[in-house]
Image 1 (cartoon, helix red, strand yellow):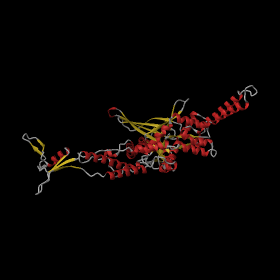
Image 2 (cartoon, helix red, strand yellow):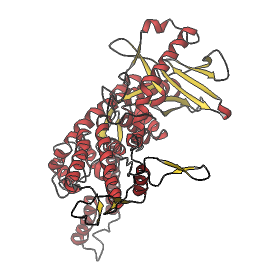
Image 3 (cartoon, one colour):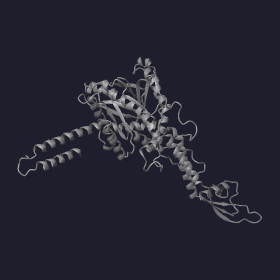
Image 4 (cartoon, one colour):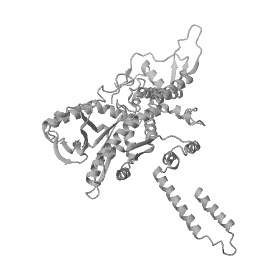
Length: 528
């Protein structure tokens, strides 16, 4: 792999282009015809040549396979040449996805109870909270993410499934209107077999069908349509998510700074290693090699390195970490001596430089520095908000874009629920679904409870219970049902005990004392 380290443009200027096609031209094309297949080939080749390199490079940084590993080696083979790759990309990615989705997304649809049940079941069946984390991780790495909806099960038990698609193998083609409607999505991949054989597969997802193409390396004729199937999503079942309008990754803007940090850390390690392996210079030796012939020929005619050749002498001394110098004694005579050759190391300056790089990486990715001594400790909620303000601003924007993808997911899924699953589902009611994000941040429990108490009587009980969910982990509607059940149980217990209370006219029964104790007992239970 050839990489221009810390110079020139990093990616192709068209590495993040969106693919467009005229809707009228697409409408008259036959997916099995040569014209459409040729157009498909052009899209795939554009994606491979201009976009895949960027996507792979961003994934490399997420795996801590940074460009420092591909830097040209030092010309001096005896000098230390460490390559230390930092893991900033993964740190930034995990912070972003955990901050936004550490607490799962909540869906609420008050207008249609049946639809709410379908959404809840859909989320549970697909382990949606984890699927969303995968999508968000791709967004932080690549700046874009893709998911596929498909139908699983038989006619009696139809299930809509979710699958995350690799952004390195997928793209969506849009029409050229301001609405930017999805015309079709393309997924392409290669399967390798033994003895160098491989097979290329291409899947094209349209509003109502899926087309499957195949191309074998041992066959001529190029890509061919081999199968097509129908689907009932009434839309392209591949959804593209974007982290921002430019579709850039979370750490893409600071790749140069990460490279500079890696280089600084590597050179620091090199300095330490070279210091430990410093050359010992002995002064006062009258001979350091003077012969001009690098090789000599012995009596048998065999060539071998000349130990008196200056180049061979220096190389041998460096390998032995010992440097013997001819100091050409002056007329007063030379004083013999020995000393190690080392560089002066500015530890304070190096630390300040590395700290500045770390600060720039975190600042320009809106990632709080949790190792900062001023970040932790006993601070008010308002002080913490100021420290997280930049991250919050970025999170809110990403949530809005993420919500757009989630709503498209639901609109696609509701078509199948209505047709094959539950005919009573109201399609239009899906637009009434409220999507709630809760930032995953440490909570001051005492402060939270105090705030809820102060709002009692001002806002509804349901709103208070929604706030308390951060503490209890129980949904507001479930908590309301529990309270209703608890109230009914307490009333039933009170009635039962009242009915079984002894007749005060009976001998030995004190009406005032026992009845008051019973009321106090039941009332106390109700309060608790």
